[in-house]
Amino acid sequence: MLQTVELKAKKRLAGKQIARKLRQNGEVPGVFYSKGISSVNISVPPLALRPVVYTSHARLINLDVEGETKKCVLKEVKFHPVTDKIIHFDLLGINDDQKITVEVPFEFIGQPVGVRKGGIFQQVFHKCSITCLPKHLIGSIQIDVSNLDVSKSIHLKDLNLEGIEFGIPADSLLCAVQIPRGKAGEALREAIAAEAAAQ
Image (cartoon, rainbow, N blue to C red; front, side):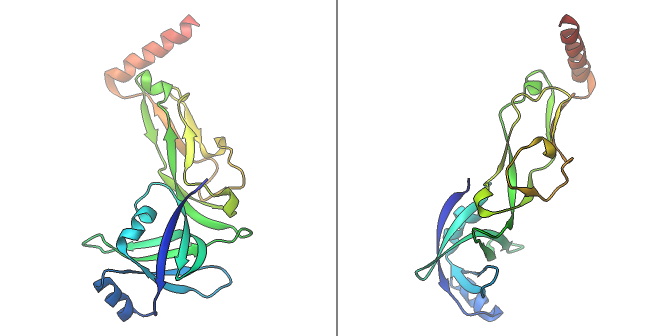
């Protein structure tokens, strides 16, 4: 389930000169667009965008444009190449009966049992795009790795998430616990062999 953020915006005129003037006056220009309707040029204070942009999870946005409320998600954000300030953003409107595509992070929960034995946890993907109806939107793809043992791995096809299409192949490796190199790895292999022989 997505967390919801409230965002108030003002309408603005289109054009590069207007966008530049807004930035000089401490506003960030943006665009709201949705399938089947005309886009709306908007602007917001930079601080208002913090909970939307600077977060590890995707979030649902209740956008208030001068009293008119719209449901949307952050589609794209542009930063200044030198100052790293936000200079533009795009918001994608959502409708209950239309699929949308957003990018969400992978969130690995727990400490793998293999790491406690001396293995090394390897995370292959940090995020990926998903396509789904709004009712299936999630803020992150949570994966419990507590039971992941040495030399074991988790692939995308191992997940069971209803109504979600992923932007990466089903056989993609997401994470694994590997045996370290050198003496530590040799010792771990010996410990695993001894444990297997004792069973």
